[in-house]
Length: 533
Image (tube, rainbow, N blue to C red; front, top):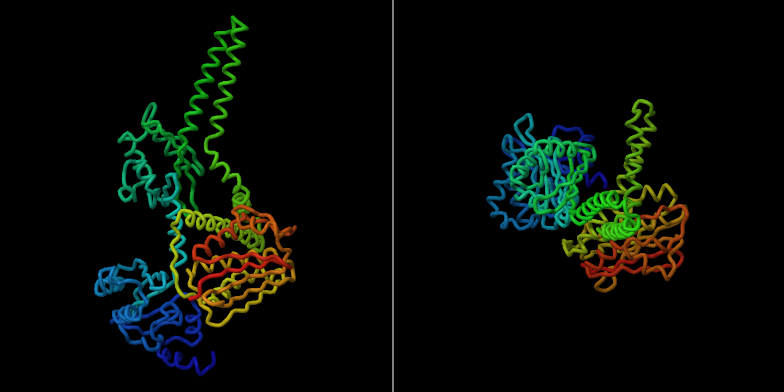
């Protein structure tokens, strides 16, 4: 941008009292900053404000307008989603302006018409005015929504407690276990909930109730506790409690009724066998026949126990390596730092922290892929389609993987038609392209090349990601699109992933009514075909 383009903005904010280098720094921030005087009139806005509100007039034209007028401009220019559904424009403005009242500083979310979610935070200035910070919270809110959806979809009961051991979130399975609604128990302490449930007869307790409560509290407070609960109706739950990184606790109830019954039967049979053996010592022949019968019964009971939870065991066995690898790195390096914090040099601490960060990122990526596939399979993945610029998505996704590419001297080229728009969910499209680029960079040899392209073909848009890696045999092209399949590309320097990236891309593009095509000739080319906007 030349001087002639910067001059109007510099003139508009020349009387802000801030040095030019400070204004430049504020314009470089990835959140919007607005300053209002004591009459709630705008005196300053950085460049990111116009990035968030793309249809509003330039920030220079907004100086001097009241907060009320700014909100009405947001509505008039179609920036917001359906305001009438929130009670009408006047009620909406009153609720927004409440953040400018003393003591009403709680963050507030507003939904934009294009599906983005913006979080607003306000603070009072020493001069009696106000500062408002505007940040794009779309990804964070979507991740939270995914997490809440998965918790609700689970057959297990989930509960999360804060650092004071008070309930902050649970699914309906957990609330129903205690015979209450989720809203009725939020904020209760764990001990209060346990004591209330005991007094209401929600547990089958043998012996002294107070002793049972103390054992339950000890298990809950342990770093990794396990406890078996049985209801008066005979349903058994394995309860696992774990400490969370924010100082709180997580609790999971898993129905193990069948296993519990098998274990009870085995225990009873063991006692019966011991009693029978003592009684049959007088008759060897009879004892031999009885022992044979009891051994056969024991084998059948063991087989019945082994069949319990087969489906869950299969999934856990498939995923165990991919989950354990980053977790072992996180736990191992953090334990190393914890055991002797004063014995490491700053560069060693930085190296170990970097390894922990990488392992955490790998684990988060795997979990997000599982959550997306689970949501798609259950028909609960809701697309927010809009006209998305393909070039911007390609550049943003390539930037995220540029460090890995440059570390191995891999060249990344982008060729995209100008003004190429795709009718797609922006977050889903970014996920698809990021998965394809990550796969290409991982399998491209050092000094190789990754090519990204976007072209329009009639009513469709074709986005391709190609590399010059070892490629995939023709017979394996269909298999690599199946979850957990890791066949095809033969490399010795690449740690195979969980095999979820390409299946997730396929599921997302088909959800848009498009296709994913793989071709292998001197490398691998993955092509997305999506509706044009």
